Every structure is written in C-alpha cells, then in structure tokens.
Length: 272
Ligand code: KIV
Image (cartoon, rainbow, N blue to C red):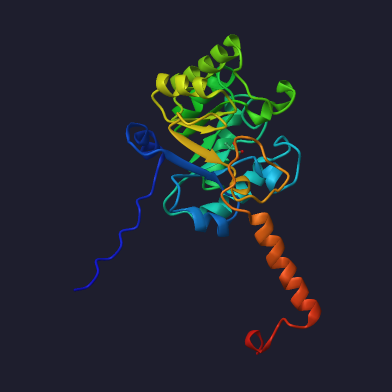
C-alpha cells in the first residue's frame, strides 16, 4: 500500500487570520527579513512579519525611525519568495502613512505590489484611524499596532511599558476600538500590562497579537533575532530565548577560523 501524499498546509490570508480568533489555537507570528530564514519558518508559523525592527537587528540602528519604504520593499520581496503557507505582513515605516491617506495608500500599494506583502502594519490608534479607514476601503488589509509603538520612542521618552495608569489604559483601549471601527483585520498589542491586553482582546472582534502584553492575547509575536538568542546583551523581560545562536555562531565561525589558519580546512573531502 502506498503512503498517501502529504497535503501541504493551506495558505493563510488576512481572512483566515481573522477566523483564528474563534478557534482554540493561538496565532503564532515571527519576524523575518531574508529568504533563507523565511523558508525555514514558513510552515511553522501563521504570520511572517517584515518588521521595521530591521532598522535595529539588520541595520544596527538604535531605533526604527530611519527605515525607508525601499528597505522594507527589498526585504519583503526576498521573504515573499520563500512563503507558501504563512500570511505575509510588511511594516509601514515612520512617516510613510502618518502624513495623510494619499501617502498611506500609495506607500501601502508599493509594499503590496513591489514588496509582495499581503497586508501592511502601521502604528497608532485614534490619530490614524481615518487614514486606515480609507486604506481598507481601497482593498488594503491593515494590521494595527497600539501600546508601546516603537515609532513614538521619542514621545514616550524611551521604550517604556504603556498603559500603567487609568487614563493611559483608557486611551489605549480607545485606540484599539478606533482601529477596529476603521476596519483593521488584526492588531499588535505591544508593551502593556497583561490585564489591559486582556480587556482589549475581550472587547474587540479582531485578533490581538501580543508582544510584551501577556498571555491573554489571541496570538504572540517575537523578533526572530531575539527568540533565537542572537544578541547576548539584549534581554528585555518580554523576550524568551529559545536558542543560543550567539554561542552557536561564535563557536562554528571560531572553529572555521582555527581550521583555515592551521591548514586543516579544506581537507581532501572538501577539495577537487
Ligand atoms: O517591527 C517589528 O518587528 C514589530 C514587531 C515586534 C511587532 O513591529
């Protein structure tokens, strides 16, 4: 008897991500910035995000503000070539959408057309909801992002947990409601108390994806470099390191260097 062919997992879309809110399984999201990594994780997760975190983990900047639309298009296009299962989302960089609906639609259009993203993510709530509404009307799936929104780092005076007092809690809740009414299909909740993320998750009908926002969100996202332990000096409380890639890379490259210097590599097996 022959083994039946394996059915590949189905392609996830913004619609299937919305449907996951009703299911028992949490949504799993991870960032990716290149083809090789995206190929490894495509079938393991529900969402691959080409985040503007690339300004920090790829470009080595101290925040995300200098990332350009061209940067995200470049990385997203590379990632898209590896994606056959996960839902692919691209971040809209700082000031590519805040300046008005025209800019937002044009720039999101480029992320979808040239970057091959299937949806865009942008930061902010009440302040951007009119813009989001128009983007959605033009057929652009938009993922929201509220709480500790990294593009507002200077306004926050650093990367600080948001929503600590009653007023701030209410303001973030209003942001989430405004985004839902504007038509987002999902929303990242970043850097906020667990109870606030729980209240938002219960209040809105679209899935919430948390980062530093506790266990009650409909899903979780982490920056790939963080969860793989690639930056030994970066250990915020919300990051769990599932591997120690820093040590693995240093040990492998150290061994390569040693073998090249001693003449051990290449040996006969690796020569022609
Ligand atoms: O830029 C990014 O990677 C993000 C996630 C951390 C949510 O926005």
